[in-house]
Image (tube, rainbow, N blue to C red; front, side):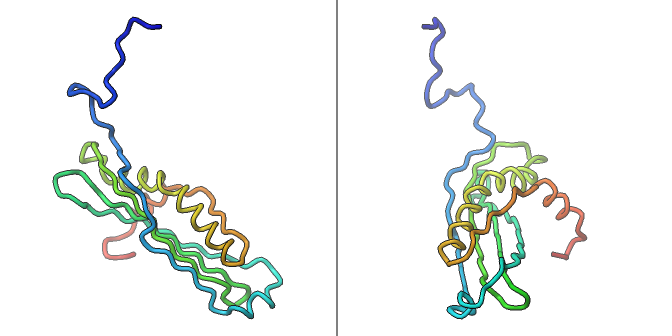
Length: 159
């Protein structure tokens, strides 16, 4: 047993707050559509091609409190040839309290926060596509740094 006192469980006034606190995470919007059902299940003979679109948005919740909503939006469009198999759209969010310097706020919001949300969104998308009668969509890890850098490189006013 150590002679060192145990730190208080709730922290003390001289300790720095955690830089990123994930207060809550939740599914904000989820849509799964099979436009050609039920015929698509009888005619599907090959693995559908799945096109993915991903976006990250962040907005302040409480001004002056450093509380933000970060939204990870994923859209999966599956087709065989020109025939639509399914469309899945997911907006998965987290409410974060950030204690970081202002110059680090943007990369934390658009890189670190979605990195924490991604595994949960990935599982939801895999589950909904599997439960919808298709092979589960298993997203590969996302390079959120590259996504953020690409966004910064775009001219203002383009999406």
